[in-house]
Length: 191
Image 1 (spheres, helix red, strand yellow):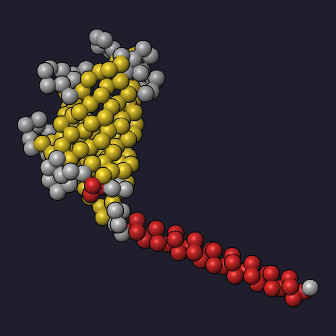
Image 2 (spheres, rainbow, N blue to C red; image 1 turned 30 degrees about the vertical axis):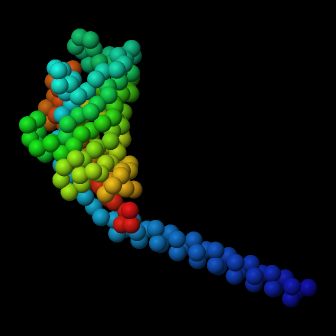
Image 3 (cartoon, rainbow, N blue to C red; image 1 turned 45 degrees about the vertical axis):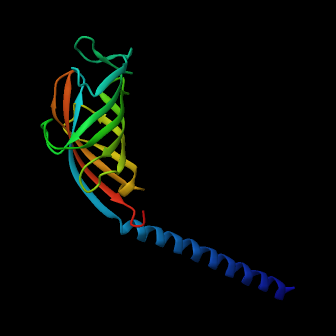
C-alpha cells in the first residue's frame, strides 16, 4: 500500500509540475509579445462643428437632467451628440485632412460637464491610412488635460492599446470646438 500511495504522489507531482510549467510558458510568451509591441505616436486635431451647413456634430437627444452649462438651451445631463468630425494635422480647419472621428458623446455626469465619449478614429492619409482605432473614456470638458483610452483597432492597429491626451484648443459654447489629440498607441508585435 505505501508503494501505491508513493506512486500516486509522484504521478500527481509530475502532473502539477507539467501543468504549472505550461502555464508559466504561456504567460511568459504573452508578456514577451506585448513587451515587443511597436509604439505609434501621432498628434491630430479634431474639428467638432455644431453650427452651419457643414455641421459634423448633431444633437440627437436634448438632456432633461440638471443643467451643466447655461446658454439657450442649456446643456444638460443626458444630452447626446453624434459626430463625424474632421481630423487634421493642424488646428486650422484648412490644414491637411488625415481622417475622421466617428462616434458619439453623452453628457453622463449629473454634477460635472463630463462626457462619455466613444469614437472610431478612421485614418485616410499618412502611414496608417486605412486603419482605425477606438477611443473610449470620460472627458470632463472644463479640465485642461484629459486622458482617454485606446481600446482596439483594425488594420495596422489590430489589438491596439494606449491612451489619448486630450486638450481643448478652442471652444465656443454650443457652437464649434477644436480638440488637440496627442495619441500614444501600442500594437501587438504579431497583430
